[in-house]
Image (cartoon, rainbow, N blue to C red; front, top):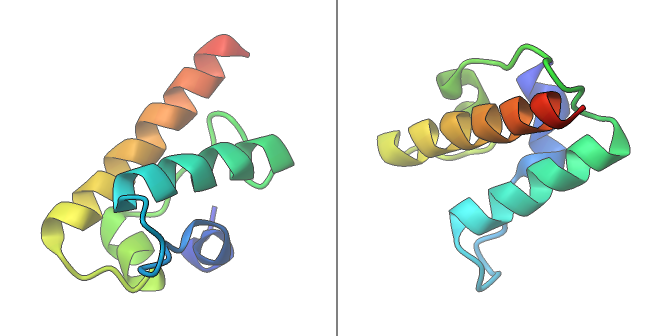
Length: 79
């Protein structure tokens, strides 16, 4: 999966009250349900994805990567 393809689906909205983590969780679940992310799909690096999402803080970069990996792993196990 290319970061540029995921960015529009996952980009957090700073004007929303939901936390970055919650916005990402919802966006990832939505992308999975739409088939934009396939269970077991390879993920871009956290750096590449965070740059595509315009997220610069190192902690947020790791959060994005770990959250994507956790949700994809759980989705793959349930499939």
